[in-house]
Image (cartoon, rainbow, N blue to C red):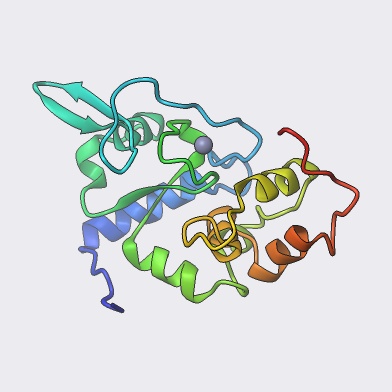
Length: 178
Ligand SMILES: [Zn+2]
């Protein structure tokens, strides 16, 4: 299961360009303060928004990501577009999307507790809202909404998320109805 995804030189260059846009230190497109934008149309079996263009179905997160970064959708071939800020497949908020590879996803998992992507880019700063989000996302005994999965999705270390969940930190923030 540890097969590395190999990018062509062109794909690697495109990913580098997209990451520079996603996580520009001065003005990153990826933004945690914008709420999710649920897709009201049809969706694929994995919950991702489905659109229709030129006679075929389209994965709208890819279309929207491409439009918002001013690149043709075909430029994303070989790359994955994932929900970086939220873990909501139905969300099509462009500031919640980031380009990556399947290798990134595996590295995120391997590095849980050490260097999640958000930390590398200096994005992972806990706020009361994020604490409420973490507590709302958590589902006991769920593989997709475990402390580790939430840590990967939001770019925090596993111990940070665990401390929030057990109330060792941020105990003054109640779960509330976010
Ligand atoms: Zn979202």
